[in-house]
Image (tube, rainbow over all chains, first blue to last red; front, side, top):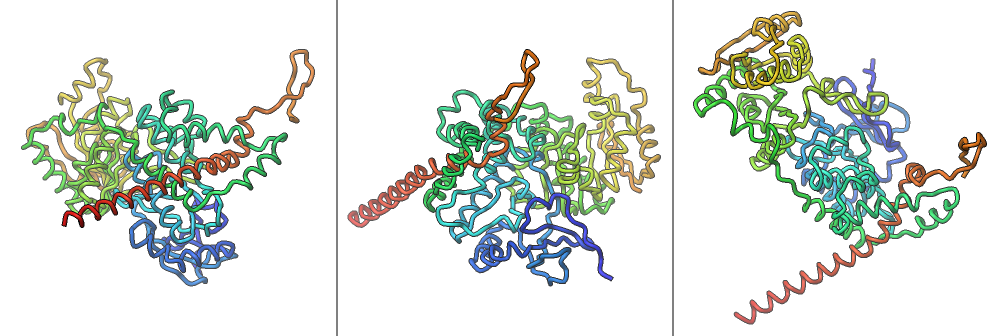
Length: 467
Length: 68
């Protein structure tokens, strides 16, 4: 009896094909209508060139019998990405790297007589810190003189958020959680400072682009005129290359210096001296090894210092999550310099983690739905949630237990200077903030304490909770 | 045209939908028209850049050969 196929929630917009899983294996069905493009993708050498350069996810072809529905021309099995992240969970540098990858792919595609038919940020994923295009069906045969149909999408998904983050405020990247198809160009145009009109790249790709969309949209009165103008619009091969080159230089020039946030310099200012830090690192490594975890979620990871420790302790994948844009960006840059591929930086606010998004709440999964991880690391984090955000210890334990099958916690007692700082300007209403209460909160969820050790002379303790 | 809204005197009056509505219904036309306009110029710039680079390279090679 064949195992039923389960279609991936986000894979329904493109009639060229769809993703599904069967028996835990990820497969993509390529529909008959896309056959010609898929064959050219292979025959032109584009697929081989992109895979060789690590720009496109590789796949193997599977028998047609594995198709999940009618109309199949091919079935392929793409390499699986260890952890899927959403564009609204990327740091500035990750978004920039994804944008540059998209432009590079388009450049290579043009050289092989094909073009990207979409430029969605959701088509890019990260293997560690390296971006890769995961949508094999994003290509179509380039028609002579046809404009790049994905130009607007590229500007909305990449250029507008990067420009807003670099030129206005880094936090504007959060708009992408609301605007899943990228930041509307008229909104970006309004938010950018007036002086950006003097920059040719911003002028053409954002401001005039937004006005052209509004001006030439097919209204009742000018539908025929707009259609005629669109039909007359021709872009030469050199024009295509010029456009891509200009977008690339624009993205490369959009720079942001990661400084000036609450947690940006945490690694230099936290409580431990060098000896204390070494002791904590050894202890964390010991606990990660004891958990036997292969996939670790490091919550409140800052720039990923202990994510590296977890990786060295045997984890194959560590997702280094933090809500501070500066900290995540610093981690991303450092990991990129080191060439580390097993740590994935993630920008996420734990007090407001990514929900299920998109059509029918099923298009883009929540952070919790992308778990559970083998282990969750919560080092010096619980007091921020329990005291800084007034989340009861039961609630903190429930979220951590949902995200991981084992939980490693660094408990920071009330006497600790960091907790005292949190309490300095407010009434202490946290009578139940005790180690025993935390232990009890995990016990109710079926997690027992397997290990407990003091972290040097700091007064803090490390705990391993297992099911 | 074709939309109507309640007038101040309670009468129905025709109104023209705002551009933003049309932009929502047809975001592609304006993007393509602008692209066709700027891509030509950017393609020409790219050609000039490449020609300039090639000329500089050739000039540098020539100078190197002359200097021996």
